[in-house]
Image (cartoon, rainbow, N blue to C red; front, side):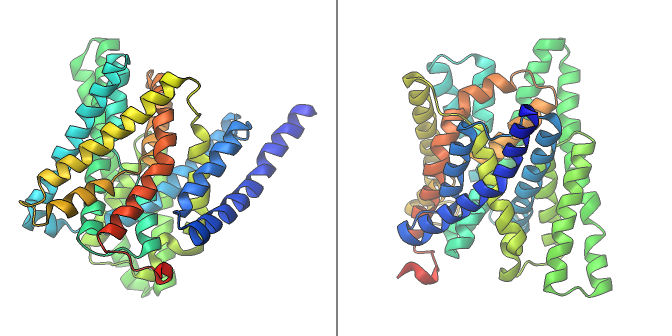
Length: 397
């Protein structure tokens, strides 16, 4: 009876904590000028420290699906805003993203090794640190109505970060499988198959959508619903075959953009549904992490975060002129890539369910870094857009 009461309290507590998180977000945004997602994360950390996170397998599965679906909406929107023609016309943007991602990987991995982390754990931390949180970046850009060189570069570099983070994570998993099984062929094959199937699921769901929308002449609301249901379908499909729903959602967004179906400003964030799922996503993901329990853990988090931001800003500033912008705007594009947590944590959670034995150890090592970047990351993006003069918020003055 006591167990059932505790379980009921944990489930009933979620609507209350989501409401509290939303209220805190509005106060922080309107009163202090702080991104809403920072307050959502704070509510999740507090609720998680009280033991409010679900621990039953059924509840965990449901919450993980909702989190993947929520992040999938952001990845779809991010993919939808990627202009592949621009990357072909100006290949230095793609080169910048690749170099910046690899530099971030090696810098963070080097810092982790210098601070005493094992080589395999350091490799996982480096791979996860490459990713920029699409949820935090897209949400801050939409809230501030960002538009301009820094905004567009940050969005495109974020997509490249997410793609390469998945690939590097698969390399880390393949390396671990190589150590476990001794077969390089099995390790490489498993990694390539997961990436290929993830992309294939996004293409499979996305191909019939444009014809369906033309056939029924869907209005703006109908298009938004169809896109949301498509993301839900691709999330279910990829989880069913145990591949990455995050990469599939990103592929789906890029494909829809290529088929000339454009999201209007009214459709961004997916309306009320998107707003609600945003609150849930940041509360849930922040609740999965825990504050560092020692001074050395906090120092590790701060140094990893500093190394990550420095690597991103250095690479984007270095390639700024050849890619067609100023060094200042190049550095600001790197600063805008500071948000980390949601994509990295869900990628790690997916890997844990896929049988990745290092997931628990990596989570313990990187949790402090994720908490630090929960608060610093969105604020850095906000500063970058303001310093670049690309904020169009009505309440700025």
